[in-house]
Length: 423
Image (tube, rainbow, N blue to C red):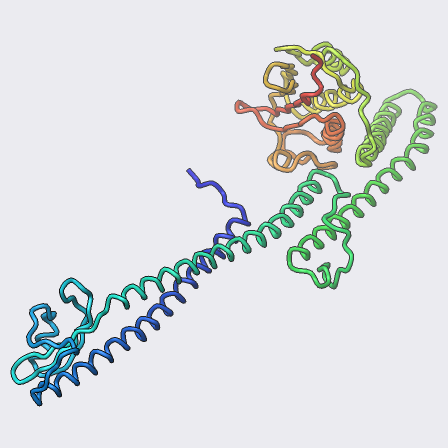
């Protein structure tokens, strides 16, 4: 099981906190060691000075009262005792009558002269100093972490806005922009701004370029279709004057196909413009599907698993189902089955299924593309029928999914919006 994803702002905040804690820890250790060396060094220096004085007084047989000096004290640490018996001087932290002291020892006429200096205050001072360092480090790390979280949240929010705009563009909203694009420098980067602003500016630039190209394509398609419509009507009228026979039938058949292509191009242009609106009315979904399938005059089985009354645009739903059924008969194999199930979930569904070779992988991954029907075994055509079906589905808020059935055949699933159901 994969661990839950951590957002960018928390990654930045945690990284800043970890770095600040590491820096605080290193600085705390360095400061502690420096202060400890200085403080302990002063105590050692004092103990050694007292030891030298005690040795001088012992040598001349003078009283050592007030120096805290002892000969062979039992509390003297064993390592320091051995060091003194070997003829050397030394200091070491130990205890005397339950108190923490700094011992200084040296040989004295076959014995060990030892001097002790109180060390408890040094311990307490170092402990208090360590507590202060720890508190300062925690306070500094918390402050830096909060500042990092604030900064990371700003960056994350800006990136989230950019990602949301990118998703809107992917969904077809080419008017979506992150900013107004003012003050951009060379390469689309916003002048005087950071990398996040540069990414936003680049996305706006890509969206603008894509929108311009699509609009040019839409205008070209609409212009071509409009320009072809008038002469094509005249050619069709002229073809009716030809003498009856096979040549006339072939010419009329191709002219009708060209006319259908022209009408499809005009319809796609209207759908691409984004100005189409649904004319909603209440219909019994099962009866509506039956009448639509019957209008195609193709041998198609209709199954009503569960019916419902829905609000939809009859003309557009007829167009969607007709294109799907015709596509199934043209490129698939019988039997072609249309199933209506209004109880399959929160959204009524319509399934169109054939038993042919199925949809090609490219269509399953990228959806239908106009003028592309290069699937082996699924015939040839202009590739506009499915594109028009998807366009009308978007106007009606219908979710279209193209899949292949496990036992073979193309399967198209239409999910009507929840709001379409009439209670």
